[in-house]
Image 1: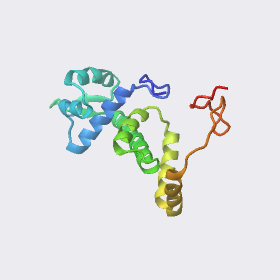
Image 2: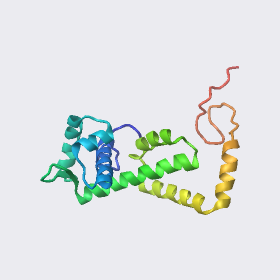
Image 3: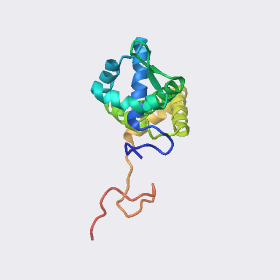
Image 4: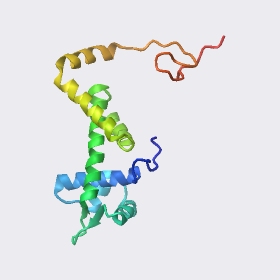
Length: 172
């Protein structure tokens, strides 16, 4: 469900989650988070970010301090850290396991981080840890995956994956 809408599991939109994550990341790097720094991090204008932060302020996830720096509430920081964790796990899976380029992995992890469950994230962490700790599994996987090419005949229902084949069926 990468629709850009609110996920049934989460009350925040992907944009709101991006704003929280970016605020947390800027704050982690610099010790503070100015509106302009977070807007630059996200590649959005200052006014766009200001409007986007209003619902987060209304829900008590973020506020401004006396110097007008952005401050995450404990709940806002927890959400930001969870989103950051999902993003890092997905990015690592895409790069380290599937061999996706870092730039593509960055973009796609940014899309997927909003719809993946905590349970699936933890299973990915387990797989990443297994591959990091078990050299035999890692070696076998990295030897076999690049050479593996599925051999499917186009059909209405694939016997291998149970889905409709993306290849067009040959016309008789």
